[in-house]
Image 1 (cartoon, rainbow, N blue to C red):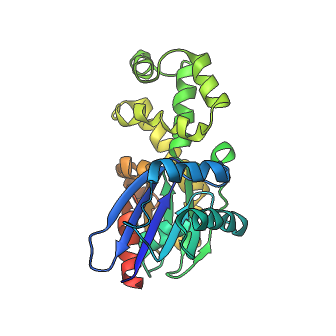
Image 2 (spheres, rainbow, N blue to C red):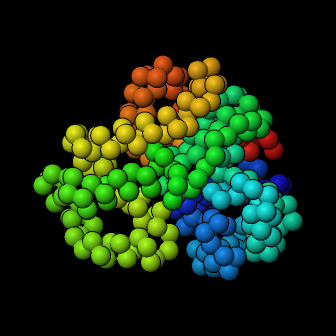
Length: 283
């Protein structure tokens, strides 16, 4: 009986799923694993303390790990070695989170695939391979349309006193009013991208306010302008979106697709359901 352990890791969290023939999938969760942001010992510590894999109870024949920061060969080899050592499983495949989204959203069909979560990314998928991809400049220089991008705007609007009284009070209720402490967390503590993405809570819970709607639409429009409209296939193939931000603000994405006369495909919170379907079909 063959079994496969699938992992889909973003910057904030990792969804794990063990697929075994004719059995119900077994799911796990850990924090995000990113070889660009974490050392080998940090990744191993996450596996040991959060996943707590029972080799006897949850044996697997193969691991397929999809992750943010796992897009180049060097990082794939590095992460593969960590996984092989921890799980003691010979068959280990590491691919980018972009490939996870492409397989989950398109299966074996063509399409433009977009990730909008803590970070952002996009590609054109031809049904087998990622054929074209806009560069991803990461949380400092890129991530248009992401939680990180929107969080920066929220912080700027608060700190620069652009928000009206209502939104300033909402910000302080959620995050406090100690700006030096906020900046300390941003510049002195690990994972500033996750911290910034946390400010999206203000947007999600204050929909309808014109400043909130402006931030959401401006950031998502930046993603369309910077990435989606650069693919000539955008006017021929459907656009698929996955990620927490995409799902949270799917109404704005649908409206932007309409404005640009593009075909909006599926919008999901996570690619895992699609990955389960894809790998079941491949077994």
